[in-house]
Amino acid sequence: MRSAVQTFILDGVEARPCRVEVAILDDKTPRTTVVGLPDAAVREAVDRVQAAMEAGGFGYPPGRVTINLSPATHRKEGPLYDLPIAVAVLLASGELGVDSRSRAGDCLIAGELRLDGTLQAIPGGVAMADLAVRSGVGNVLLPAASAPAAALVDRIRSRPADSLVDVVEFLSGRRDLPVARPPTMEAADEGLNLADVRGQALPRRALTVAAAGWHNLLMVGPPGSGKTTLARCLPGILPRPENGEALEMARIASVAGTPLVARRPFRSPHHTASSAAIVGGGTRPRPGEITLAHHGVLFLDEFPEFSRSALEALREPLERDEVVIARASGSVSFPARVLLVAAMNPTRRGNGRVGSDGSLQRLSGPLLDRIDLQVEVPPVPADELDGERTAEASGDVAAIVASAWRFQRLRQGSVPNGRLGSRQLDDYAPMSDNARALLRRAVEELGLSARAWDRLRRVSRTLADLEEHPEIESRHIAESIQYRWLDRAL
Image 1 (cartoon, helix red, strand yellow):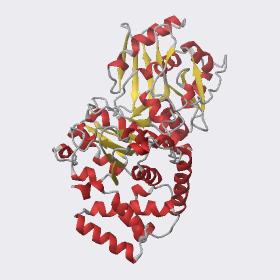
Image 2 (cartoon, helix red, strand yellow):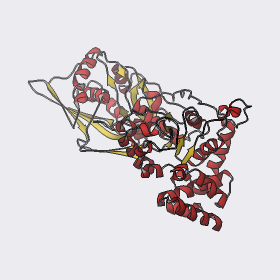
Image 3 (spheres, one colour):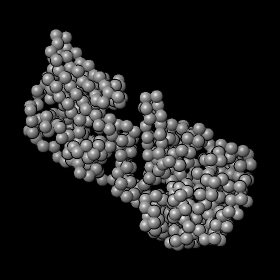
């Protein structure tokens, strides 16, 4: 007696196909064996399945039961295999009838069983539904707590079940499981409003440029000058995520167990965070803060106080928009397209000439080269603190940023200016003769790297986009040089 049901393997934030195969053979000594690279949680599934089946009124088959998780080349982790193992055992033992096999064949099944037969939420429901679409499967059977997130994926029926009995009755045709509806997105924190920021004309402008071109930003200034407030205003001026971006964000949230929100994420880890916490890692690789901030903002306050290993680990993800974590058993890739915003004091005492106490030594040249905008945030004068509020509100700036995004996309598709390569810049960022001459002189006098040359071109392209100007002019180059403040200050 044999059977098989379809489930999935969670690989990073992606789902890969997996088959749970069960063979029941006559044997005087009853025993159950799980093969196919299971971890301890999967091997323990046998005890949970037996208790859940007994609670539901189903008999566990006597004899020798072999459970194979295919393909055997990939390690299987976690309790999500409880439900597919239980269903496969019931099919192989003939408890569900012949028609149940065809119904099970059109389902991806996953869920953790409690000892009383009820189902508990699992991670990766959105990735599982994605796999079902790619595999041509019509239904996903999930615990009731996990099914709504999977319903975000179009062209799939996400069916919530409360218990093993619910699943058995659905597969037997005795009852129908409803189709889950997508969840109501948790109201996102609207953040602060730029209208509440006093003074700081240049940093406010830099924030607009960062949002318009997806440029990484570093703000340097004494305590109380408004760096953190400015950073927290950024989500309010970024355009809302498109459908594809929202689905990627939901996939990450379903794996990490974080709430689904309607706006772009804003992550702000403490400076004591390890490199694994920032970029991901662990024995079983988990997404880090840079992945949880995918399509959103990663804010690193007290930038030089992060460990050097954590900061250097950011270099490749900032360049490639993904994190690849290699282990002896294989590698895992996590998406990491983030807008990095960092803030720091000029010295550890909070004042003085930037870097005069050696606090900048933690920040390598290659890392700083990946930050397009470097601006000073000076103390706000008393007359501006006490004056009338005249600054633009976040909604007004958001409209300007959205217009720049549309102008970019008409020209170069979905790649923002901050991610354009050298050849793409040659195509999309033409410069006037005066602009080219000014850029050459600035690079020579400031001793900038080849990477910084392209950074200046990208920022200049965004400045021209804010004016909807097709060509980079010398004024755009001149303004972009202002945003290389550390190169001029050191």
